[in-house]
Image (cartoon, rainbow over all chains, first blue to last red; front, side, top):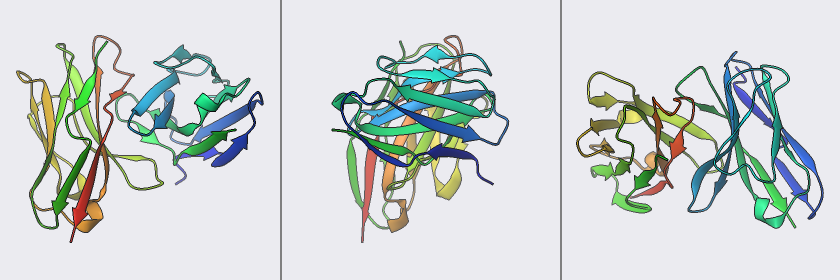
Length: 110
Length: 115
């Protein structure tokens, strides 16, 4: 069982470059989320989706965009990466309450 | 906006000792409460959750937590810890009126179990 799969797992970017993180879930969950984790900050919600074709802003949405064109996929985009976006990014999916997490994507912006 | 406070950022204990990781939340409305564990270089796994019913919730790996509405707390306990319990633990809350699809996480407590 794959569960929640994130790609890529590691990426190094230069300031100003763009990239997309892909999250795929095979559990037919309606809800999907992108969090970022920084030391001493816990997890902060970037964007989330309550169903195919819908997205909503979380706590720290600036500098990120998302799309949910298919129920099983949730994409997180950085149009112009900044060093402040160096972080570990976690995707999660949920049938309603409990979240199921991917293993994370470590992004470094130089 | 609701918030979660984990009162201890680091908790060192010896193997086989009891441990309590403290969590308080700000919301005064009905809530769902969760504890997640994160082992090094991994994602988060659900330890236990409180949705309704009994205020004492049992989870995996021998952990349990007690929901105390009057104190807005959801402390995590284990009577005897193992080296393998070394990890970071996160408390999370979602409020039913604000949209239970969103979880707010605390900043985490690093539990280190020493031999």
